Image (cartoon, rainbow, N blue to C red; front, side):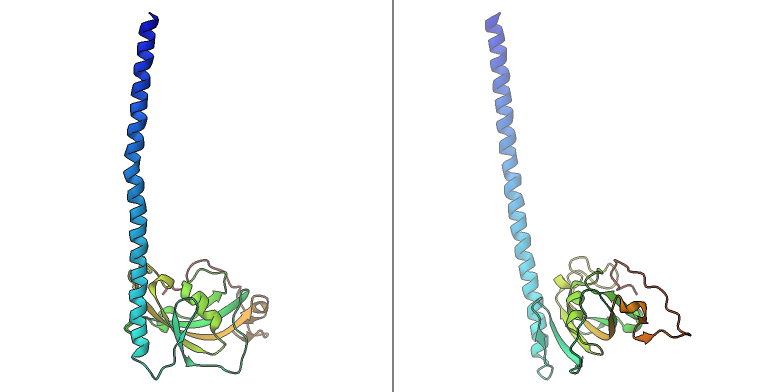
Length: 213
């Protein structure tokens, strides 16, 4: 009887051991495949960024009369109109009022200023295109700047689900009309002082991208 029990336990142990070994071996290819996929994905992204930057650099080289500046964030820009008098720039806690035109990298208009209308941006508190979040903070009031954004700091892989496609580099022309602190906005809206005949509606903060034609 004891011999039978020992035989049964031994058999169960062998089956359990074989089962564990099988599962361990089955997981190894999944792990290797996952690491390989991540590496290939990273390599594709690097090639995509390099390709887009090469195209932008060719555009810059083809316009030697236009002075372009390279930002630390990986985009380029030039001034259409420059304000060398003012020193202040928008910062966190300010509200920026601007107009925006978006073109593809060849210069064809995707969204005109009329399409988009006046834009309002709560600096560093609102979710808009990554490139614009940084670019607006480089500007002075009454300046017009054209930015060349690679897709990874524009709308990336998904585009805007409307007119902007997958991995699309963009030309964005920003006209910064004014900016004020949130505190000052209680008495001033878009640079217009409050008077007895002026009615200022409260501004509602939205967390969505202001690009909403």
